[in-house]
Image 1 (cartoon, rainbow, N blue to C red):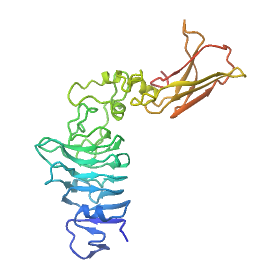
Image 2: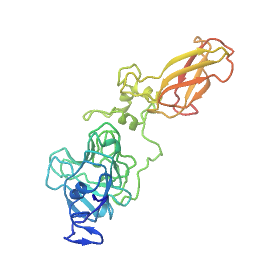
Image 3: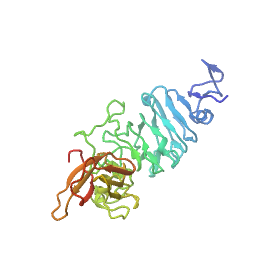
Length: 341
C-alpha cells in the first residue's frame, strides 16, 4: 500500500519509530518522500536544514512541522536548477505555521531560482507562508511561473519589507518574482507576523483607474529595460481591436483578444412597446453592473440611465421594465468605475 502521509527527518535511523517505518513512510530526504507518497498525499518535514533540489511531478502537499524559521531547503551545489521545481499539480507548498525557508543557488550568475512552476501546474499550485532569500550574488528569484495562468504566491516573506522585485511593485527590493505570480499581500517581516497593507487601503492603479495587477495578469507590463510607464501602457491597444486597455478593463473584456468586445447583438422594439437588448460583455475586469442608457437624439444627446445589469461572461439581455413613450432613439452600455459614478 502506498502511504498517503510520509515523514521526513534528517535524523531518522533504520527501524521503526512511533508508526513510522524508515523506507516505507519515513525518509531522511524530502525527494524520497515526494517520490514515494501517494498521489494527493502529504509530505511532512521535520525541522532541519535540507540541502536538496526537489522535483514534484504529481499532486501533493509539502508541509513543515515546525514552520519556515526552523525548516530550510537550500540548493548549495547545482547552479541553474531551481531548489523546487513543480511540474504537475495541484501542489501546496506551505501553509500557516507549516512553511519553509526556500533558498536558491547563490551565484554571481543571474537566473538562479528558488521555486519554478511549470505551465501545466501554475493554475492549481499554492505557495504560501514561506520565506525567500535574495542571495548575495546576482540575486535569486523567489518564484518563477512558466505558465500564463496566475500562480498563488500570497503571504510569503521575500527578504524585504517592501516586497518582491517586480514591475508591478515599483518599490519592491526583495527576491524577484516573474509575471503571472500573485504575491500581494506579502509578509513584511521574516517572522511572518505582519502582512503588507497599502497606506491608503487601496491597490495601485493608473491615472485612469486601471489596477496595475490587472494589467500584469493580462501580460501588459513595462519592458525589463526602460521606463516603468504604466499610464502609457494603459492607453495602448494591446490586441489591435480599437479599444485601449483602460477601456477593456472597464468593459470586462480581454485585452489580448481582438474578438473580445463590448457590443450589441440585438436591439428589438417589441409589440408591447418595450425594448429588448442583448450585448456581449465580460467579467475580466471591473465588477460594477453595466448601465443601460438611452437618449432620444444625438444632437443634442441627453443620456439617461434606464436600467442596470449584473455582469456575466458572454451574452447579457435586458427588457425595459415599462412602456417606452419614445418609439425611437439610441442606446448605449456604460461602464462606470463605481456604482455611483
